[in-house]
Length: 433
Image (tube, rainbow, N blue to C red; front, side):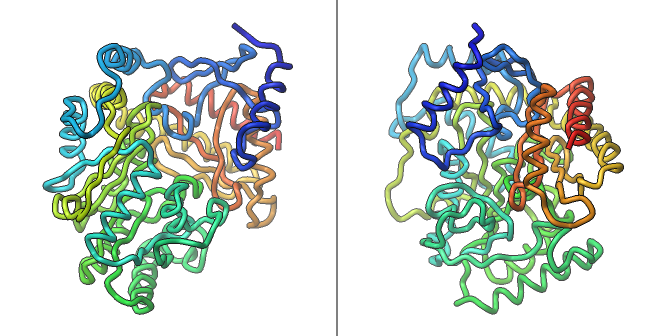
């Protein structure tokens, strides 16, 4: 059933009347998406779009994936909720698979309902284990919207308060092409960031709890350090007994193509102590979680539960989705099709002075826009490209400093033909600006 454009304006007015003003919507005329299939979605007016953002990297596999849809409806028909007070077969099965895939020895898995909550739990575990409230975080980072995760987010656009239960120190290294070390080659860049980390540790009371870091910064505009940076950090952290939390909410499950987890690009000194995940694993069902060494996970000195974490329905979805992802080698697809897409986009960008950089890995691609002839980020250009892409039947996201980076993260089952179609639309949108 299609709706009249007037309905969209009416729905938008109703949204504004009852939801918070800071719950911003994309587009001048916001879009109600009513159904999807594969890599496509349709709005209430019947327009079809190629989805290159997946509801913020969350429809990871495909829209209306029959395996996931069936798992959800079958489980919902049996029992929807039991809570963590009873053993749950789907929860245990998914935990077993994630523990085995995580690369963390003697791993324990705790399920939450979102990435924010997963990072919140990881911070609780690490600060408890180390008996310290000091956290190292990366500049330009984003870790969620709860009180504690905002306190370790290094990106002013997403940080509404400076109040925090944590004392956070921000380290260099997450943004390769900006900042004081941008001009150095990769090896010198890593050395400078390590020296900064060591210097930073002289500014603390000692006994820092953990470093939390996204292997590829998501909201930050898909920026990433050279491979091996966090492995080099690890040597310093290990000397001080500091834990490493890898925030894999956006990088997990093979999206970067080269690796199943983002931390594997930094694996020389072993896996992280804690790993957080969410978004894509449920293909849209709300699943988050923390994987940690048993020693860290089990050290909680108080009771804790999760009412909705590990719910039978979301776990059934996660199991079906993970099975599909592995059986169809979507990581390999992200590497191949993502590699092709980034090359196409680099070719398009080469002739455009509004584009400063095309960066990323696998199906996680960022395009940073600037005022032509300068190095000044242009959020205006990003907003214009977003609109122009929509007019051409393509949905993308944005982020980065001030919102000047386009974020491209299609479902990982993207075909070569769809990659070409999306690159074509994006090229036209960029030229239109």
